[in-house]
Image (tube, rainbow, N blue to C red; front, side, top):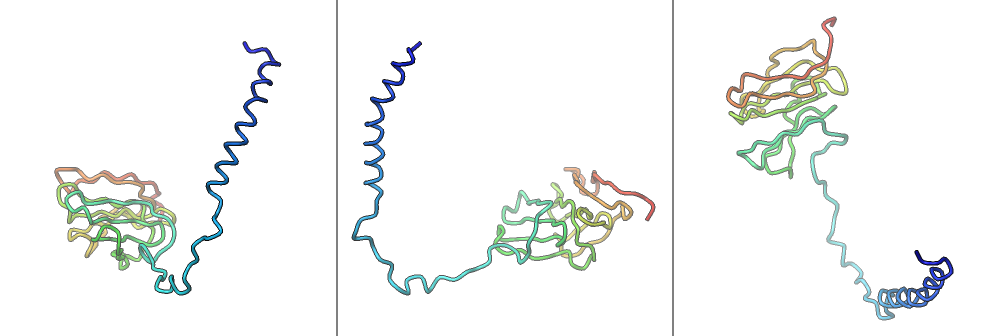
Length: 173
């Protein structure tokens, strides 16, 4: 163990070296008197652009297609289901006709990428489970209309007609 007075003595001897190091760093990063000036108009050609879909808020579910690396589906709690075919550069709403915007889960069948399921209900009351057999072009309600919240779904990897649904709700409506 270092005696108390020797420990402080060691710190006192290191302090000048530390000050010199800090001063050297500050001198190296200090701006020079001949700093480059920005030419007026240099940035005039730049403009703002939107990245992503024209929507705000959060996302509740995202599912990609393993055999199509640029295709993704996104479910939102208040904006329906969206699809991209270019890896996320442009998103298109594909669920507007269903008259329910709250999506709790979206899943693509592992055996058939044209089969997509959307479980409704997350932030607001849902309307059951919807299925598309044409990669989201058209949708049909396939049941669980009284179940108000669908939180997750798993499609059987060998049979796209078998789906395990995690749901919460009541049967009084």
